[in-house]
Length: 122
Image (cartoon, rainbow, N blue to C red; front, top):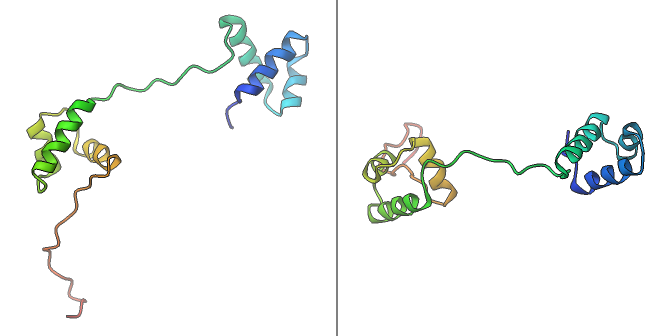
């Protein structure tokens, strides 16, 4: 189910202040009665009908540490992710570092020095 928009939340508050029932408001706005009840209860308790911003976990690696790691990678382009983590003394997993670098457009690709498959014609 999709989230109730801020404009709909304001309509709920307006109609509840005018004495409308939660059932009628839910029918008019095509949302569940429980959503109307929760939004109205939150407004009565806090005076704010809007949702609180979501809070995530603090990243283990700071922006400064990432900048140092990227500079080290540019300095040594053939460095592996594990070596990069070790040299920069970062508290992050290999997959976590890979994701952070991919977001910045930096990828670690295999070299082209592997053998060709037997099916390939030369």
